[in-house]
Image (cartoon, rainbow, N blue to C red; front, side, top):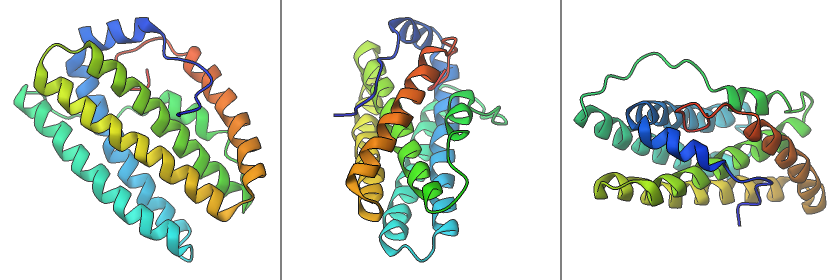
Amino acid sequence: MLKLKSDTPTTWVDVAIRNLDVILLDHAHCEKKAAATALSLINRYPDRVSLVDHMIALAQEELEHFQRVLAVAQKRQLQLSRDSGDVYVQKLLVHIRKQEPDRLMDALLCAALIEARSCERFSLLADALQEEAEKQLYKDLLTSEAGHYTTFLQLAREYFEKDEVAKRFDELARIESEICLGLTNEPRVHG
C-alpha cells in the first residue's frame, strides 16, 4: 500500500527501542513540522481550494498528534529542546523541482513519501514496544500517517495527470529509498 522501495532496516528498531526518550522528542518535532508544512502549502497555494481544505484538516490533526506525543514525553519527564533538523527530510526535499507547477507536484509527493516512511516506522515501533499505552500510541498514529500519505497522493492526482504523478512518484520513491538506506540508524523517527 505504501509503495516504498525499501524497508527500514531492523537495526533501526533496536536503536529506537533502546532510545525511546530520544525518539519521543524527535517524534514531537516531526508532528510540529508536519503541521507547519501543511500551513506552508496553504500559504503558497491559497487558490487551490481542495488543497487548502485538506491542509487545514491535516494541520489540525498534526497539532493534536504533537500535543499527544508531547504529553507522553512530559509524563516521562522529558523536556522538548530546540529542533536540530531532519537530515532525511532535508535530503529528500533537495529533489523538489523549483519551477511551478512541478514544484507543487514534487512537494505533494515528497510529503506522501515522508508520511509513508513514518507510517512504516510507527508500525515497527508498535510491534516492538512492550508497554501497552506506548504501543497503542503508535498504532493510532500509524493509521493517521497512512491517511496523510493517501491525502497527499490524491491531491497530486487531482492537480496533475495520473501517469505523470505515477512516474514522478516512482522516481522520488527510488531517491527516498537510497536516502533511507544510507541513514546511520540514529535514534530519530527518520534516523
